[in-house]
Image 1 (cartoon, rainbow, N blue to C red):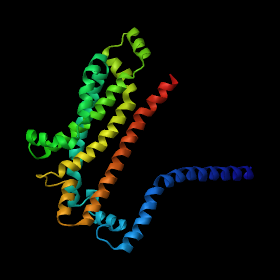
Image 2: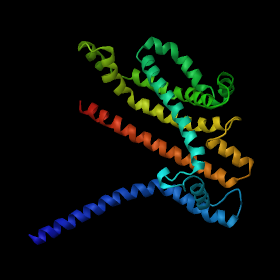
Image 3: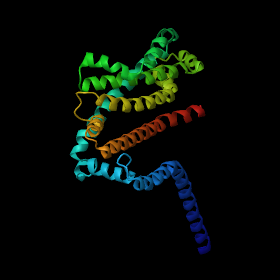
Image 4: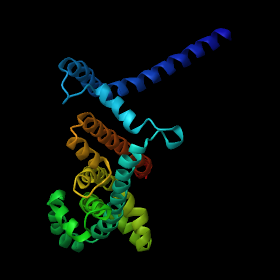
Length: 284
């Protein structure tokens, strides 16, 4: 009996080690390129001694001292972080939320009707092809400089990927399911909620990921314009004016980290919403 318990304990320990190994190997592979680049950059930058390419550890230390060395009751955010990171995230969140809500609603409405899609598709493709920075002078005239102009430029430019992908997802709904819904006499809201929206979710999230990256880019671009007095974009221009290249590099690293974290969070939401629906659809 004791021998069986030892064998079972050894087997459980072996399974735990194998599980840890299976988790660690993909993690190391996923971060190996970044770690290798940093490992090469650090000694090369220290050997060169150029102010234009500081060592990455120095950049990270400067970013921590500048934005993340505050008290614990403020989530370690400094006063500079409250004037730099939070305003940018608020503008980006407002613009992205408006783009997501409007894009999903209009996309599902357009995608449900073949005639509406045929009429609106040329306009959608034209609007999507217009470079977002080219529209900034129009928004400056309409909204003047300030936060409303920045939020409007983010929302208007980020809405098109969500709208087009939502329309394509709605059009891809299985016709047999729609016919079954008609036989069961489901109402239009019921068909939208139980058939069209679940079918369009993968395409919707594909558009949301594109819009998220666009929102981050446009958030920085809108803060580079005259009239901005806070935000990450303003910090970049201000540091460049003062020839503070260490802060410039720290802001670039901050933008990369924010983009990665936001995209990871959106992927987690997508996996939570789309994964169970897809598995249930396969089962059905």
